[in-house]
Image (cartoon, rainbow, N blue to C red; front, side):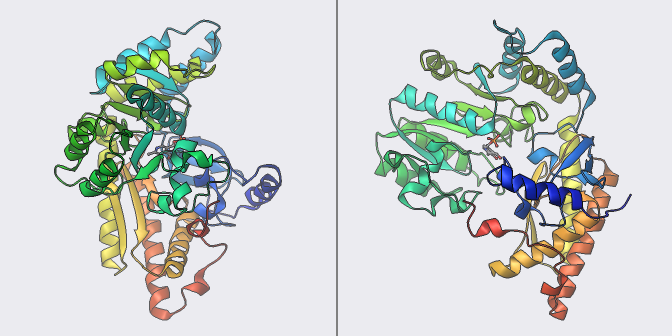
Length: 443
Ligand SMILES: Cc1ncc(COP(=O)(O)O)c(C=O)c1O
């Protein structure tokens, strides 16, 4: 069934904007991350990579829940474990043995993991890792690179200068509600720039509790960069935390730390850990993690049985099936296909990152023009039955025919952009709202 518009989705989103501040719970699910008016705002159900929206349109999913759904929607082994667990019960007064079983598995697979604590969301997991690092070192300052969630410790970076976070994945974040007393406690450094980290560590000598970063995102680490970060952190008495919320169980079974052969002191996981059911984990060296026993880090839902059952089933599947090889192969197919289509049609378009999760964009310095180009491109994806942000997460359920369908829609998008530029009618090709108002101000 071909795309036939999203009137029900649009009407519901209008109502949501009246009931829910900002309309959604996740920024990446806001209308301007897609094509307002054209893209579905609501999904009714999904299986594998097939998604059906509220209006009955079918799409192939290349967002996979913004990352977690690495095996595919309603993946049988995970759903069976979850349903079986629901029948056994969820959230007991005493503990569930599943938490020991999953901790055992993570210790077996993740190089730095000697002990594990469980959480629910990625941001919360990072906040706990920061608490542990501050508690262990008795220091307060965090040196960071990249995006690490919505918590006070991170947004504090924008207190000194409201533009600090603009080059760290999510631009335009306001600090309303973040205590001014946290000013100067979170300092950024630049990826692949050891001097920028050295400058932070020297300027705040003896104060830096930890360095937190993703080992990779859209760029590849230059030779020696990750080792240099580890050594600099340790030379200054700071702990190294790898945020593996996106890289975890995607770059390699043991995360980016295994892929690059650099072990952090602590690592945080969520997303692919449990195929879409809420679960996060802080893993780390015993010497560091054991100190968390005397820190107050506690919640009723950290060890709910459904999340643990999903995590155990997901990680077991990742270990026992050729999931990662498949995800990489599908990502390579997509990345190579997009790169060659962009060259063929003479469009400056990048497809950055490693194959399991890639970031797409037009290399156009004029922001307004870039927004229109992206809008025209994404319109063709939506109408061509592809659900996607300006990036792609690959899964075990993607097959070569799904990649071919994406590439066919992407080619129509790239051709529309090329023709629009050549004929000077690009803006006339905009059919609904514009993608990307978030570049101006998120909140
Ligand atoms: C690297 C990284 N860290 C942390 C987070 C926050 O995770 P969550 O949205 O589950 O709180 C994200 C979310 O995309 C992320 O990409």
